[in-house]
Amino acid sequence: MTAPRPRPRTGSYAAVMSSDEAADGAPAAVQSVVRAHVDDLLDRAAAAGHRLEPRPVVEVLPGRGHSSSRPATSREAAAVLVGRDLLDAPPAVQRWGLAHEVAHLLPSPATARGHLGPWLGTVAAVATLVAAAAAVASAVALATAPGVAPMPPWLPLVSVAGVVVLWLVLQRMRRQLETAVDVATAAVFGLVLPPEGVQWLTTAEGTVSRRLPVLLRTHPRPAARRRTGLDTLG
Ligand SMILES: [Zn+2]
Image (cartoon, rainbow, N blue to C red; front, side, top):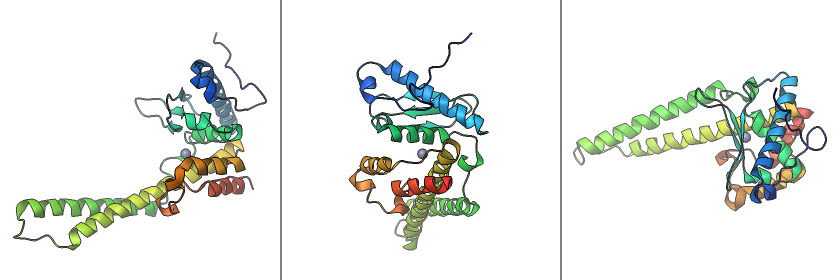
């Protein structure tokens, strides 16, 4: 017989994580509470038709690691990794953040890693080929006949342009994935990034990241993420 799982302390789902507990020598208690929250989310996802088996591992990261999730591989189980960023967040942001990390793992077409427009994959593949071909051609030209067969001036430009395009496409793919996960977080768990979360995420991004144009970001802007959730709930 297995021991009953610890449940969240208040209500059907409430964030009671505390970085103070984690820092003050009670990591097992924090781990247990976080595990209970993840189990609660997985139960709710299963009830909504998104069963995740085997259940992911839950780890509270030491130090100042950032929260994330790790999909299952042939060698490792899926994992929800909870860092100090989430432990230090306001409770409503903790609830949303943990649900977001779980939503990354749901076996849903909307959040599958390959959920991307077909043209994006084509552009990325072509950009990779162009960059690789240009880089190889540059290296061969330099190694075999420097000065005799001067490298065309456009060759390094094409190489750099190919890498830049590939990088921009990958950033866009990441933003699309995050948006799909935000949609799933709202659709499956009914959770939207709360207003204080918009401010909290903006502050947490730091002065450089928050000023980056959307084109260069890995995640949509916090306000846009809240709008995505609200639009999903209608
Ligand atoms: Zn995410």
